[in-house]
Amino acid sequence: MNYIVMDLEWNQGNPEKEPELADMPFEIVEIGAIKLNKDRKMVEQFSELVKPQVYHELHHITRKLIHLQMEELQKGRVFPEVCKQFLDWCGEEEYVFCTWGPLDLGELQKNMDHYDMEPLTDRPLKFLDVQKLFSLAFDDQKTRRTLEHAVDMLEIEKDIPFHRAFSDAYYTAKVLEKIDREEILRFYSYDTYVKPQSPETEIHADFGTYVKYISRVFPDKQTALEDREVTGCRCFKCHKNIKRKVRWFTANGKHYYAVSECDVHGFMKGKIRIRKTPDDQVYVIKTEKFITAEEAKEWKDLAEKSKKQRREKLQKRRGLLDSILRPME
Ligand SMILES: [Zn+2]
View 1 (tube, rainbow, N blue to C red):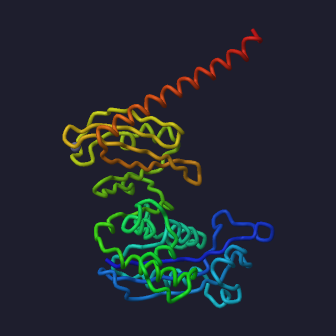
View 2 (tube, rainbow, N blue to C red):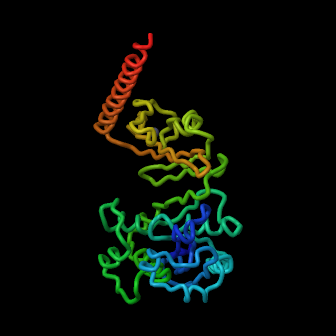
């Protein structure tokens, strides 16, 4: 499998002069990429400018960030041509996209949609977020660093300037080359620009220490939370139905937690995040992992506390309602 390390530069509208298009707030103006072979060695490169069709002035942020002038961009070709060339360049062999951070693939697909191009995928797109992998391999496993920080830390030679699509793809590829533990490369991310529309296109990913489920789209939160796949509890190691120890609870209405117990594998914590789609439907991202007995106890306490707080809030509201209604009697 090849690795397509990709970076995009994009422009946006100046609100007063060029209002942003809802379907494409960010117009891609440059695509840069490096192809690595299965041994993660650089084999090919891609670099093309895109001639803007929507926003005809560079936004001041873009101008500061990417060191590009509109005159230069005018020498590029239109997005559908460049994008098609890029996708052809990616090749027939199996590959995975790799980007620094989670944003590029969403913007790529948004731009492709704007020009009615054939979609890249019919489900969330698996990719490697090298910014995340860098943190897993060399840092504290959660902080997101800048690309330049990673390059400095790994003592990669800075032989070309940053913040152009090609150079950022090049340095991202250099960071990816430096990851020396193969198991780190198992930690795929999923771009959810395209949401699952049916059970067949839902995502069930097993990362060894935890599992992730990306559900199909539901009309609303209530329907999602009634779905058995969403709230069911099966041990992800032995796939048996297991006992619920703490029922799904939420403190903020967006994140839900539950704990269950497998006789063989111990306590398993589930977390559900409710995500909205642009047309106000919802889908769910559920992660499950095993936790210790002490942690299970902490979650149980937290659930009780949250239940109590909710009850108190409800009572307070009722009391308030009573005091408003009483004078009217
Ligand atoms: Zn089990």
